[in-house]
Image (cartoon, rainbow, N blue to C red; front, side, top):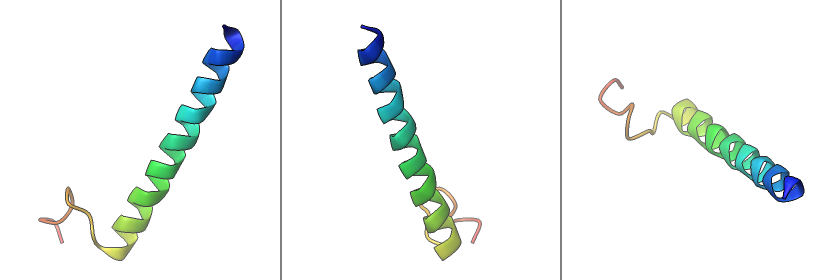
Length: 39
């Protein structure tokens, strides 16, 4: 049970890291749906 929750937490951390990386890349390239009106 502990290993399952730990593995799930690790996968969620990796997923959030990937999402943060993609968000940073999109913001750097100036293409982001939520930030479009600002640019």
